[in-house]
Image 1 (cartoon, rainbow, N blue to C red):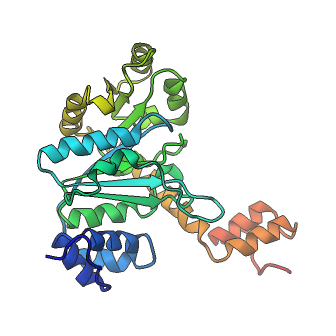
Image 2 (cartoon, rainbow, N blue to C red; image 1 turned 135 degrees about the vertical axis):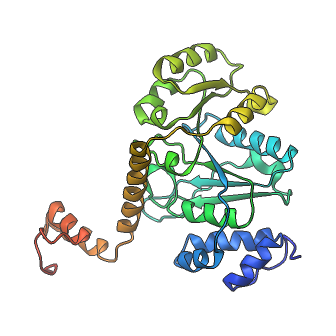
Length: 306
């Protein structure tokens, strides 16, 4: 078996074989490839794989998402399950570089071979998820992980994509600080399958629970993640949850995911830089530039003038 610390082979079939043999480094390399231009090569090599359970965790900064995930990892590892954590980090809209979040709370699991923790850069992708997430989930399913915990950026976007990938979508909030109201404004309550008031030992927790129950029909739980208080109830709720869906809801989630992925691809369009310069210089208006970026045949045709 290839050990977690050994150098990963370069070819996709070799990487896949090593990762299935227990090499965390090879698994990490595969996840790196699906973030780049070799995504389709990796996906083609995977073959059929059973579906993996994906639980999404989102919420505003400071609510304790990483602490909650660390507690969940510990609970599922006690049951002998292999757990992967995909933590989607924000990116600079200019450089596209990942700004890694605080993973200190997960440090206890970094030496556990049954836990894979990976940060993915959002790279301007809307909805709080990275464009590579669906492919990364497929890789983890092929590597026989039992559960994927997906942590989103948590900045309160109006277009929330997590519900298209995860079931359940868990929204973590802190008591007070207007989190419940802000979550409603951001659309988080609309995608929440489970609402968790973390730091429930603080003042204002009971009022936050009441506010949430007045705002939504989703189940509301309380948690003190560092102490494990309420953790068993949260795990049971995640395990028991199976989304009752209509075709309309599935279609709406698919539409949101398609639009979000399409916008990510438009950000990388080779003509975007020239179009942006043309608009900045006054040679085109933004409407014309958008038509050309989309290749809309109804928009003005012709090359950029210099």
